[in-house]
Image (tube, rainbow, N blue to C red; front, top):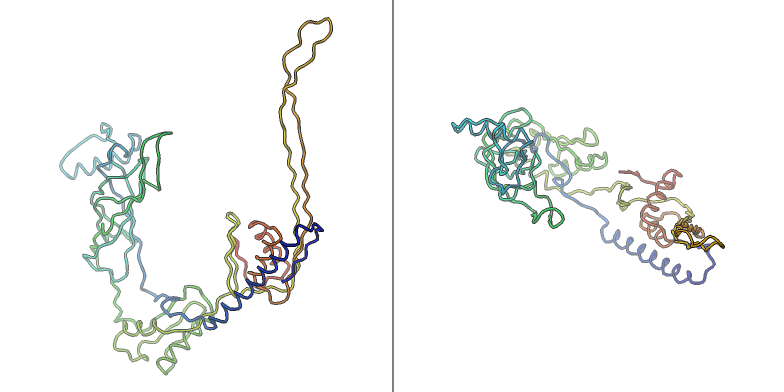
Length: 388
């Protein structure tokens, strides 16, 4: 990596020397890291999922009671309607329009139903306010049904809420830490319906790659075939590998899945850069390479400052006292056109060297984002560039 600074100010020379030294150190560190880990091996279970074995989302609607005056207000109609329905089930009839309470809140309940969950298993649930309640602190969720995507009830939730924040005081004298309208009930739901998958009927175990890649899919099939010493696995596409259960001669499907998931293989990291323009965050893979490229960066800033000054008028002859003070605007324009600074990268340079060089010539995080986009448009960046 070479840094060429067009400015002739001697005060910048030590900075350029330090920048080159930093770039050399980063380059050596990267080479040492690659040499220390020539084989990036992972377990099959860390990069794949088994088709048909997954979590299911549950959602429900309920009522939180016992709040210290921080519940929904009277204009939240559905809260009092829910209270009236709950009271009716208890044998008490009330008119929803005549009820004024502040210690209840309508909430949505969400949970994740794991695979092979059986009746009696307990789930953690998250409770979120629906209306305009100020806080759910100290509340208790009344028994509520949790429904799956098919509309069936799979669990029942109830219990006291645990909040990760608090609020004290009100208005300008109040203080709030984290959200107080979302709470958690550890093991607050009990599974009521059996959702376990019958693995005995599986004739094929399909492994789904979390990051689709043809090379990785072929590598998984090769390592499985090598383990069983016969061709029982095949890569159908970049995201799916099928393993034949009958040809594996395994005692059971769970044993076959466990044996396959614990196999090791080499994974090739894709050359990709992810950029978040809103925050200036840049995440890059280790295999990203650049073609020879030169970058020239300069900055032009214009600052306009207007100050208002009070001018005291003089006394005119033969006219008595002076008039009222006059406010006169005084505008100053400052133009700062920094000299352009250049940087050149040789063949085989990586993004770490590019970013180190850009920071050395005084670029900000947002400048780096724009420069990477320009290099990609020019064709000098050998990687996928994803802008979020």
